[in-house]
Image (cartoon, rainbow, N blue to C red):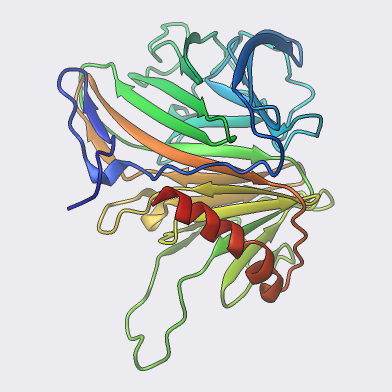
Length: 348
């Protein structure tokens, strides 16, 4: 059925391995020195309790004062690849949901108030070698207007070569079954472009059936100039001059999505499970933008969790230097696709 043991649907007693809720493992290439992983407690952006991980070339910072939240990913000495909301950095407490920036874990399908439970409380942090385990309090606080009955955890592992594995875990701590999809959202810094691969082309009449689902929202404008609809790729540009939001969801069978900005390439690998039910008309990958940010999002299959059961969704992150890419598909083929193939070879 599948190769290897893949984490997916998990009870708090015996572990049940399922291929439907997992992803591959791959190295993240920094393009520079590779060294021993350092993990240290630091202050960052006004928060007193943060944890920095680095191999000497790539670094990330996770926040413990709120979250779980990875607020920074970048090359050492270089700018953050993630967006930071300057007006919210360093804040703690409160009952309103804040975007903060960085990378977070949500649940799909999106709904208010369930998806917007504030992650403004401190998280428990355990360090196991080069792994940070970030555990939020159960979303059962009586002072909030909603009890989701779930607990969110994010495990972050960095290897000496810079390989970063992000394991997202949602546990049903309530009394009744809940249906949800784990939803991993990376909020990217502005003035970049998301690159989404399209299915391989097939001629008519060979291709009589559709090859993948695609979802648009009520505010999606397919004529917006930020979209480039190509034969091999869909590109969405982040433009600070255009405030109207845009969103797209797809069934991404190729299992990768990229964000290019200022010569850097951020690449996610994830797993598409054929035959699984995904939210939003079958979307396992989504992207959203406005005048401030662009989000690169992946989703796991819809799952019904019994009490005390958990589900995992894994992303593999890559970061490359010196990648210059134009909007031409030939440029994406020449400059992005080789990095994707390198990552895919590493995960096999």
